[in-house]
Length: 401
Image (tube, rainbow, N blue to C red):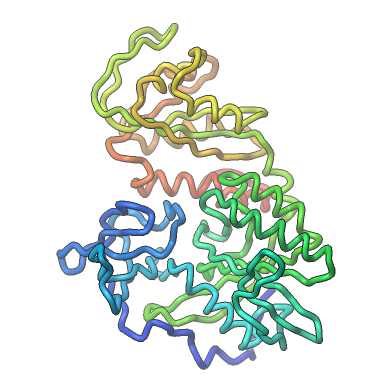
């Protein structure tokens, strides 16, 4: 579904809104959702991050973050804006507010499939009690258009959102209602990865959004567009609409599958773990692999509660852990033993017999010195089982490379 063929001219007026030379820095840490600390020539600087997403797969230690100096330094001392991050040598746009400017450029250049010849009537258009990014007109018919910036992707699969979005779900429901009143409604998902070939809602992270996405598909048109960025942060060719494999969404987006629990122990600790006896845990981070043939969300929520009657091995450790977070991996297949095997290959240590008394695995609990979400191998592991594996399912082979 290319939007241009070999004979189409390139974009002769590249999108370059910055007005200054981008500065490359080294990512150090993210103190909060809207601030990052980076190093420029060995000096630490703080920068505003105009993107509230989780960005696990992008903001990794030593990643190259592209900064733009701010015209006015904020009261918090933020002299830069973090506008992009490099992945595999390619810039990925982080600045969510710029997505609308990119889409405006593409609409006016006739580069959005189905919107060739459309004109922009109004940006930030209010309809009823809601406001949408664009009101367009094509062939005498009005079109409401919402724009979402997508920075979650694997090798060829892109997904949205990377965090639970009540606002995104509400927009879909509002557009579906307006479509029922005769308006044409469209959502453009701007994917900042030129290698994307498929797009799905992130049913692992936000199953409610995914359900609404599927429910409104006959009333709201979805247009996932893959774009790329040059090193100077100008828009690159080609611009492509990518496929939504609906049958795969129906197959995999069920309340079942697997989950990872990430727990933290601030110090060494001995814990009585049911029939396993007293287990000595060293300080650090632990990742537990579990499964649920049904009611996955309910199982995860139970694990997140600290106080409960212990039943599984993990319940005893959860009660002692300083923090606990969950990462669901929804799938039609039980990947529990495969996940445990792969985690064992990248973990710093294991706890023998933990959570594996009813299977042949050596353990389902793995230790890490530092937070696993700052570990490139662990992030690659997540990327495979939450995204890249979907492409292997399309090809009939779910084995990890």
